[in-house]
Length: 117
Image 1: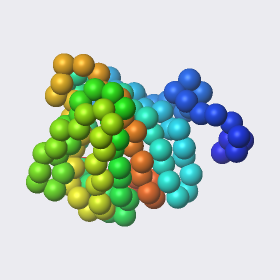
Image 2: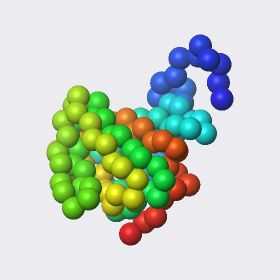
Image 3: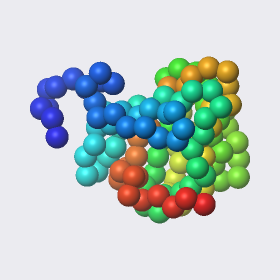
């Protein structure tokens, strides 16, 4: 883990790819919480899945995201967020015509707690 007073951004955070052409940056990666900034081009989505222990919060920074969760569908715009409780089947999609950038907060971190369905 970095210095307590070190500023973090997509310029210096750990980067990874997900899906087909999507980007993610670990802004905070600790045993108790994960904060990731992600970017998804138009038409991209993740695999429908759930987390057994982790709860997540999706917060849209720019663009428009569609999240299907628990049998419902919600469109989120910049400045809006959605909480996903543990054991809730969900899927992020970018069905808009532009990129979507969002924050994904997970507690506890969700990468090792994922069941694809």
